[in-house]
Image 1 (tube, rainbow, N blue to C red):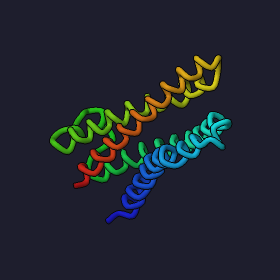
Image 2: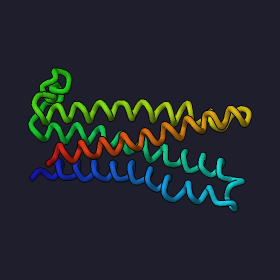
Image 3: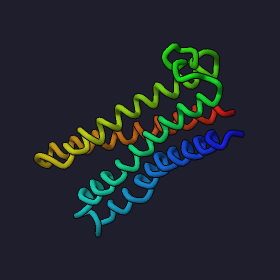
Length: 160
């Protein structure tokens, strides 16, 4: 088996783990800690700090997933041009890949909106405005997480 391909698959799995694992960590560890009475006064500031730090991890993971994903498809015998001609999306495997990439595109757009528009607005303005944007940010975060799990399921079906 090709060493470059194995490295690409390894990086792809590592990036997916960082992305999804990071979201699980935020929801399962950080949020419950910030809901405790002793941290509640600083919860918003701490969540913003954690979110900004995770944003870097998330976007590096996205970039890694995109590059390694293309390399992994090329290893299956496709050419880069086959993405544009649609040849890579033929058959059952190709349709599954198309569904996965469609959801990936949606997650990328939602993440960009969350990170660069909604998230910053959640820390600006009056209390009512901040709460409105925070509610929207939470909903987008939950939706992005759910869609990421669908992407993971589709990825597993592509290799099995």
